[in-house]
Length: 319
Image (tube, rainbow, N blue to C red):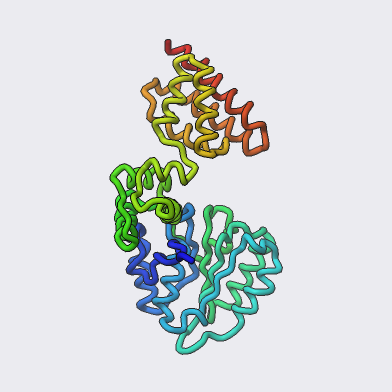
């Protein structure tokens, strides 16, 4: 079976991590001095939080890193039981080899309940002499203040386009792929700073064709072409509701999009339209309202058609 590229190309050391230079330099200093504080890694998905944690453990502990490192996912067990069970049991045991401490990595820690976080705070206090905690979160504000004050917070930003392109070219070279310029730009558009998503999309495309084009990536990633979304919006703004409605369903069927997927693309496309700022504000407001209704379980077809109808109405004011 072919390797999963996310794991195959996951950086093994801090030197190999891309896109987070400032953070990596500080982590290297921790690894070099063998003095790691409690940490919170905050930021969007696919920006290197888990990769940086594992690389830090490798660089700090060397050959014994697996014995002195444990990774737990808080979204699997959100309650106080995981703190009183797995975390406490690992934290109270002594480090292996010459290591002075162990590392507990708690992924998606912002999913822990308030009671579980309160119990975690006490565990952090009690076992600091032999254990360091690294918490990975999407939103650091969801971590209680007593834990935040005990940790150094690192904020990971979306991976820059240039860094993503460089890494994609590296993978393509290793896998004997040909990426066209428009294919590379499509990868950047689809991933939006999420390196994990970029690698996933590239692998799916490569499983079909060794030549990676924009057309191939859009079809295999359930993402509509930006120009098709703009055409949809412009049809509505020019007052052609039925044409816009037909284009809407063509996009949903051709690319296998959900309503929420399409709403996100419509949101991004609005900013590139050649219309007054006041109109953009109204369209964004209506798009946000539609997105909320879809997440609450409203009928997808009715809500998207209602959104197009509002676009037609606002477009009429411009004519």
